[in-house]
Image (cartoon, rainbow, N blue to C red; front, side, top):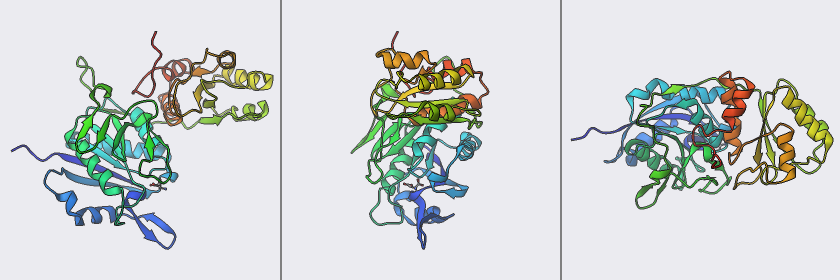
Length: 344
Ligand code: ASP
């Protein structure tokens, strides 16, 4: 008889394991473990064996920062050889940031790593927690998906393509520029041609990159944004910015002060990644004069990256200590499936 598969659960906090308190929902150490042991579904035949590693403190994900991503990445790295797959329990608020960051932090994965959570805690009779957790455990145990994924509402997305789109529905996440890697209906259906398989010539070896450089930011353009505001935003210690521009990457390049602010920052070595405010589609920086103007001012294309992926990619690239030119080069390359490079 084949051995029972084993999944390591990293519990970081979030609604899924929360308990009611006088101040509203709070994460409480040991509570999720108690709920899972008391629920026969998690012990049922066909379910994998699991061990829970709880982070201390457990957090509402609105409080998470890059050091918390590093704690999660370390927890996985430390137990990587002992388990068949990994499930990270996480709040929904910043789940897409964590999933994107982990995609960069965990290089050379050859096991399934999934982030999940829920809109309603597991302790409530009507919830989405049980299904998200059961399906994630089964996916992590029985399916080889060597990526960081985000499972929510019956769909498995590539982590660095996912974004939160609904603050109250059970389909809280979407991956607007890439179809799901798997869909859980009556059967779990993998979209095998979308999954990134390690190259057969180079057997994957996990490398955990914990360092993230926090000197980056996101700037959302809006009609009337002044060059002065932009110039102030781009001041040191800022090293890189995700510019959430219009449509295919356009901006108000008729405003000389705005253009000068970008140029000045670019000449100081600030990396400006031009992304789109649109949920679907890619930046095509040379399509309009208003985009070409952005490129002339020093912006590089972020193609179809989500803001979460673009931001965490900059945090990661600067965290690796790369010089400006190398960051610019890698920011425009597909490292973990986070962007679609234009075909030559
Ligand atoms: N505020 C919660 C969190 O992100 C929301 C959730 O889990 O859905 O931790």
